[in-house]
Amino acid sequence: MGTLTLTQMENEIRYNLGGRTDLDSRLVTFLNWAQTEIARQYTFRELQQTDTTKTTVDGQDYIAAPTGIKDLFSIRLLDGTSSRKLIYVPDRTFDALVPKPDEYTEGRPSHFYVWGGNFYLWRIPDDAYSTRIRYSSWPTDLSGSGDTSDLVKLDEALVALATAKAFDSVDADEKKIYRWSNRARYHINLAIRNDKDSYTDEVISSDYRLSESGPDYWKDPFVRTVF
Image (cartoon, rainbow, N blue to C red; front, side, top):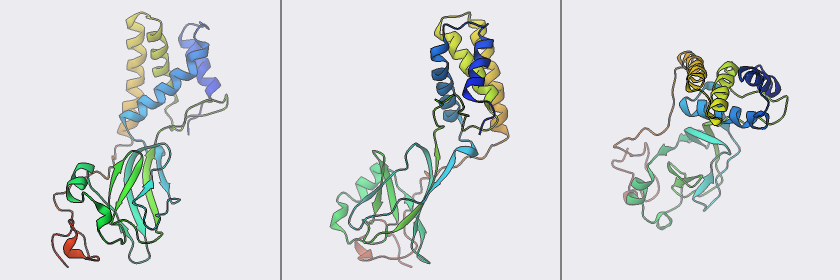
């Protein structure tokens, strides 16, 4: 979490603006825009989450994505020693391979695609299976006076970027906008260099085969070989 409270960051922005108060009602908006902009540039470790609340429903072909999800890292189906990491498939590829999923026998899901805020599963589940979802979230919007940012040690970058947005909103001297944007960029890039790992589950493979054969495997479009 950040160190400065929302009120303290507002005070810093107001000071950077030369003490002007006509933008007071917009300072929180500028800070939240700044948080979102920083999160778009990089997924910091503090934004990484794990959700274990999603359970499949027998006969239902999807589970809902976690609220506030930004990037998905992985989905694991939990079923004792038969647990598995689900394999991501692009939605267009899935549609081409499985035009009508409910024509196939239900079973333990092995693949998924993302659509409309849901994770669609293949096969359609034949039981209630627990899942473990690793993902990154967007920073929580600041609202209360004592709120601190979800971003760790980035208060200075947030204040600088929000200051630049405040100056930009009133058509201020471009030198001031550049100065504060540049200062924010410096601190953001420094933070990224200290947290360089990037993660994504969307690694496209030319081979979607399963590690085991399932029911009616000879009809399964994802089975290329049998082990």
